[in-house]
Amino acid sequence: MIRSQQQAPQASRSGLVQELKAVLGQLEAQAVTLVGSKALGNIPTLYSASDAEPPESFRSITDAKDSLDLFYYRLACGGSEEIDDEETLKRRGRRILGAWFEAFHNMLRRRETPLSSDEQHAADVVSLQHLLYVMALNLKQTGTKQDDMLWDKYTSVFERLVSLAESICGMNMATTTYDTPARSRFTLDTGLVAPMYDVACRCRDPFIRRRALRILCSSVRQEGIFQGGLAALIAQDVINIEEEGIAFARTCADIPVEARISFVIRTFDTNTRHVHLIFVRYDKSDMSRFTSIHKTVAF
Image 1 (tube, rainbow, N blue to C red):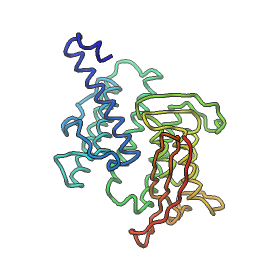
Image 2 (image 1 turned 180 degrees about the horizontal axis):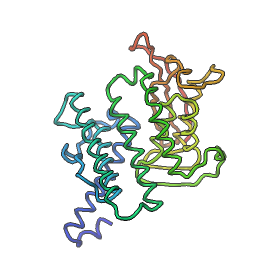
Image 3 (image 1 turned 90 degrees about the vertical axis):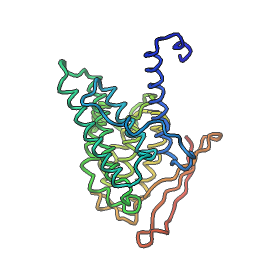
């Protein structure tokens, strides 16, 4: 494909380069999210800070998603090289997400025709990701790993995320079961797997997190390096560990802080196709101490 562009006009080649740059940025951000930046070593910055600034109005839903993916890249890969202060970074991030929201809705308001079914699904995916990034930015570097109770105040956001995902999948949760036949899907874009994994692990409301888990289990989705089946297995383990010994959890308040998993360390063995999982709980009275549960699963 690249060779075919050698005789193409400069604008066309430039567009292809930007497209490849966006795809590589998505995969890099996914990798950082999955294994951490330290595991990948020093990462060269693909974008400057000004690249993340959204326009007054997007031309298409694709443009809106590309802009949001760029924000995700910068959030996952360390933010801005020009700004070191964490609070300044967060303020700038909120401003960018606010400007993105305005540009997205300006585009929708100015449309002369209604969204098609496919376009509405795409818009829902982008809206879902925007909600997730707003929440992630608000909790960035605020001790979320130490105080897992902070997630509880976002229960209504988690519910909105799941409702959007159900709408996108066309799922009727009253009739859909874990035995629903799987439909294999692959995309390089981040869509539902990572957000629904986050909901299943971070939202301690037993009903909302199981709705997210059902979405992961309902179809075989591979989004970049995020695999739906593996994400569902890990999320199910987190739920089982956190709810062990609880007769019937009704709300997130029923999951005590000492039972909550702070994070999961994943080490992949691509030769044997196994992943070693370490489920980590911090000691809330002494943050230098933690307990862990180890498990190895095939993928």
